[in-house]
Structure formats: C-alpha cells, structure tokens
Length: 405
Image 1: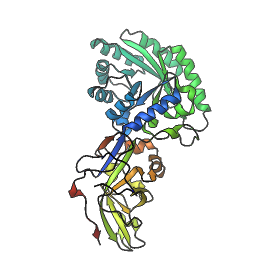
Image 2 (image 1 turned 60 degrees about the horizontal axis):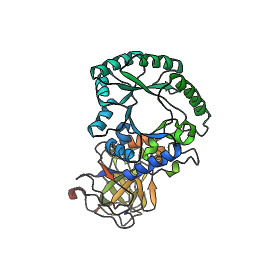
Image 3 (image 1 turned 30 degrees about the vertical axis):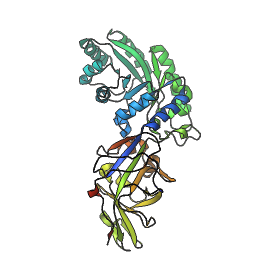
Image 4 (image 1 turned 180 degrees about the vertical axis):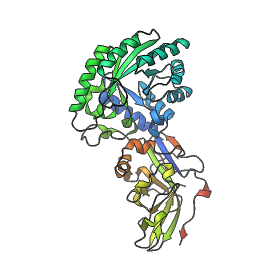
C-alpha cells in the first residue's frame, strides 16, 4: 500500500519480507557517502570500516561491500566468526579481528588470511603453531592501552610483546594500535597526550602500520589519522561527538531507517486507558493506532511514555506501555491516518525526522545501543539512494480495518 505524497519519500518501492510488520532500510549509497566524507577528513590516512556486531545491526555483508566500493581499505570485526561470515560471502578484502583469540580461533584465523590481535607471548606461540599447521603466515597487531582498561598492553609490555612476535617466522608484526577513551569530549587535550605517547611507543615497536583514531577522534584529532582510522558509528551516519560543534560530522548521512506498519486504528473514549498497567488514560476522545513494532523488535519499553513516531510526515506520540510485538500511538491530530500506512521509528518522513540520537537521549544511552538493539527478526532491506517510495509488501491479513470502540 502506497502512502500519500505527504509521507512518500521517493520512487523505488521497498519490499520487506512477506508478513513483516516492521523492517529496517539500509541505504548503501549513504554508506558510500560516509566513507567518502571520512576519507576527505582524514587524508592521507585511509579508512577501515568497522563492521563488527553485524555492522552495528545494519547487516555486515551489505555494508562491507558498500564501504569497499567507496574505497575503504579494510574491514574490522571483533570475532573470528564475524570474519568467517565475510569470507564465506566472498569478500576478500583485508580484515582485522580486533577481539581476543581463543585457541579454537587460531586455525581458522590462519586459514582465512586475516590479521589478528595478540596480547600475550603465549598467544603468539600458539598462533605461530596454528599458522605452521596451515602453512600460512599470519599478520599480527598489538593493542596498546591508552586508558580504556579493557584490552591491550602497557607501553612497556608492548615492546617486549613485539620481540616475542618477531621470534616466530610464522608471524608478521603488521600493526600497532590504541583506542582513546575520551575522544568524544570537547577538550581534546587528554586524547592528544595519549596520541603522542602512543606514537613514541609505536616508533619503538616498529610495526608496519599504526592506527589510533576511531570515529570521534577522526573528526576531533586530525593528526591522529596515522595510517588508517577505524570508522564505526560515523560509517553509519551518526555524529560520534554531538557536543563538539563544527566537527564536520554534520556531513554524514544516516544509513538506517526503521519503519513499521500501522496495523489498525480505533476510537478510544475519554477516560479509557491504553495498554498494560493503565500508564496512559485518554484525556479526551482519542484516535489510537497500533503499530507492528514492540520491545521484541528493539523498540525499548523505556520509550513509553514520551517518545514519538512519524505518520504522514507528522509526529504521533507513543501512548501507554510498549508491548512485546506492538505499540500504540496517538493519531488524534492526524485524522487521515489509516491502517496500512507506514510509520517511521527512525528516519525521515516528509519534513520531519527522528534520529537515533533522539531515542538514545530518551533512554540515557548512545546510538550504538539503539542500532545493535534492533532485533534480528526485523528484516534489513537494502536500498540504494534516498529517492524511493515507501511501499512495503505486507501480508494483507496483518493489516486491520479501523475499529470503532
């Protein structure tokens, strides 16, 4: 069912899986655009596309291909299993596995020709044996801790670890890197101090490549680009540091739009409550819509009350508690809305927009959690370009008629 011109956004139909009541549109042209923005920002450094966690919930294979088409030099994942998925999809680009290795990870890592992170001399020895068994030479990166207290070695330990890696002919010390804990803060001084210390240690270690900046530092600390940056949230079009004015991140384009079907519309008399627990009672005769997205899809229950969705280019407040598979919205001010309309949870509709940051602030979290929290049961529909018409092919049996109470 096609919406009227007030909410249509283009000309190519979007067709999510049959019976889908909500879906996420992934705009590959926005991925390519964001890679180009980042490349201009950090040149002469190159861009590594971080596609861990299924590309932050966007779909790792499709996002990887779009990023590589736009000139990304390599891909970053967290687990060897994520690297296996990309290789099985026929992606042959350089891949860096950023997470720790288990013994079971080492043989496939050697077979797949991916770079991995080694954090202990013992890990280097086991990896060298796995590489020898596979008749391979494995590229290794060393992580230097700049204050995260998560993974990585101290500056002193990194030098000794480099010597241990070089003692194995089966291993190649390919890179040394760090990750800044404070790069999103308006004052860059702490990050600059950490960068200078990292650069000194990297020179002593002598690896072929150095990388330090993720998305926030790419815009905030330009000298931190080094050989390549690791583009995560910026790749997906969310500002990594919105508190920093004029960072250049405004040029990014959102990649993900989240839509749902308006399943039914009903009249609710004044004084009647909506949804579980009576959290909202109609203060006047109201028109309430039911949308096909709930907390099992990733629409967090904490968004009720207070959050809105978009219907026909206008905001419709969520009313009552968000349910597992559906949510109720107030359509009293949008009398033309009807079952079968497309509802926007994240994205653009007419002249209105809802960004992931808006939902994140309501939940006291960050867009990373919003994106990765969209459930796997929500189909990802790949589109290319902003010019498209919202026209889902939902099973007709799912869409109800208007119901008068």
